[in-house]
Image (cartoon, rainbow, N blue to C red; front, side, top):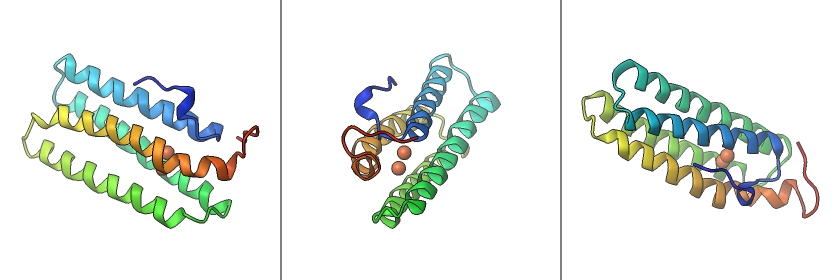
Length: 134
Ligand SMILES: [Fe+2]
Ligand SMILES: [Fe+2]
């Protein structure tokens, strides 16, 4: 996944998180393409999940600290994703190996959509045109 300037949410530290998440999804996809299985794949998936959770925590903390009015709604979007990924992951662990590609596609679509719709909503709040913060 290629990060583009139009994905910028106007907050440097959160843009950096999003770029790292794109890279982690790429690594996971590459591992599947290279037919990796078992522990290696599981380790990559864990780092993707861990980083996703860290990012959600960081983003929500920032929104809360700056008094962003839609923070509860934003938190719910994150919680929904966590649930969906956990369900896909459980299906994977229970032996449904074909789910790997579904998991990658889900993460790619979700990341893109969430950044462009939900995360973008706080862009204006943090960074009125012409001003970026970090
Ligand atoms: Fe978000
Ligand atoms: Fe985000």
